[in-house]
Length: 366
Ligand SMILES: NC(=O)c1ccc[n+]([C@@H]2O[C@H](COP(=O)([O-])OP(=O)(O)OC[C@H]3O[C@@H](n4cnc5c(N)ncnc54)[C@H](OP(=O)(O)O)[C@@H]3O)[C@@H](O)[C@H]2O)c1
Image (cartoon, protein in one colour):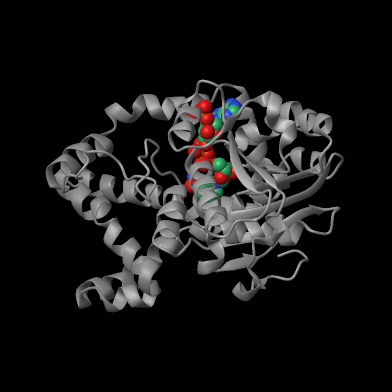
């Protein structure tokens, strides 16, 4: 890790006082936007700070704007952006740069208030030109409060009286108050109840991208598919392959989440434990460590982010090709049938809500 001291922030120092007088504008009302806006609103209702309030900016006529209105927020249009004192940028990473440089910065300049902005992930700050842009006027504070969990958990944990842990980092601090403001946001969304780890934006950006590529999204899905195909090639029923190699992942993930790897091993059968210890490491021998090192260095050099930006500029052809192939994909087709057969129906027949009795039409994402 480069530079700044890292460590757990003392929860006794958590306070929302630095939000006093802050007209907060949450930019985007998706996974994180909705959860953070609702949590901040509820926190400020429970412990009001003079002049502090939460409004939402979302695309006019979009699904998010409608949801924010249904949730009771004032949804402002672009012309009113200059009235904000603190922006939380919870738009997709790939649109942040253009929105901030072309729309938000001119509005902040025209509004004449100090430019303060927080993010929930540092990819665009660390690896694109946006980072330099936000170190120049009118911007005086740029920080990161990155929850270690999806928006739906940020809301559900908060509603249950707890929170999702977060990483906190400062990118630009001309006012000298960026850390206090970031901690106030972390407090308001409930993260300080669970734990906030101080780090740098560069470290958060690299570790977050690496984690999702090498393990929690890319690594896991590649492993599942490889195992499914191995059993299929040997003529085993695809339904059995799916149930064993994909469907049961939840159990392992939950055990590791709650008890760690050793704790998970203590809770599985002796046969499973022996197979895990003696066979698992063989999978990581065949070039996986080298591939992981390559993936990390592509992230650190900015090559991954350049590739992603080029993909977006080209209209996301690789993402669209994947979407177009889902209905012909054996593992997906079998999975749909198996899940329809074995999963307990959800009471509402829909997806999980955003908690606190607020009806949710948005699902969870990483
Ligand atoms: N997913 C998570 O839970 C998670 C976890 C940790 C950190 N993060 C970080 O949180 C940030 C937000 O991610 P997210 O997953 O919450 O995003 P998301 O759910 O995809 O958010 C979409 C929001 O952005 C709006 N939007 C989409 N494209 C837009 C455009 N071109 N111009 C203006 N608005 C646009 C959408 O509005 P419409 O309805 O109008 O399309 C919606 O309000 C990212 O930095 C991400 O890395 C996310």
